[in-house]
Length: 232
Image (cartoon, rainbow, N blue to C red; front, top):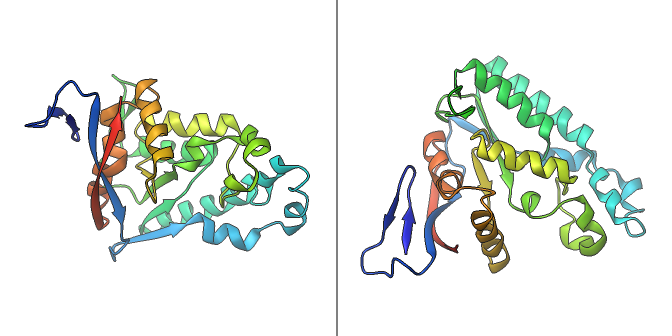
């Protein structure tokens, strides 16, 4: 078995190095840092829930994405982002789903000189910016076309978005702009999904290690640690 660290991969002593298993450390944040305000977009979006559309999703489940509309989410994000920069107050925004949100964050990170031209991606020190964000694993696992098959099993807040929005989340994970993936309760389905990401190189193992643990070290949020084994 191999252990994935922040910037290296090592063989674990007394384990089979050919057993195609990778060991990651995952954090379950407790959100107890007084210097950082942690904001759940879901709590603010709930106030804008469209009950009229909700009544129609049982006939047309794909409409669920607009129960908590992208426009409302983007408006909330813009306000949070603007206030954080203006007041110089660190915020971590949990559960972003939109390309437009990450593009805004990317432009901000460029002003902090985090963009590395030689590799065309970012190398942020997450202790520096006033705004950091995380994405929920379900918003990577599913896309809008899955509503027809999954129905209420994927009725989340914020919702599962269209495939191009999901693709954008992967893009900015790999460009090192999104700081963390929320796994919540780890189960086999999530493990299999992450295994598929590794095998298909949707996310590299070092990148995955950073967004499961090490980026949060830099942000400065307290956590409990557990181990996660992924097959490749």
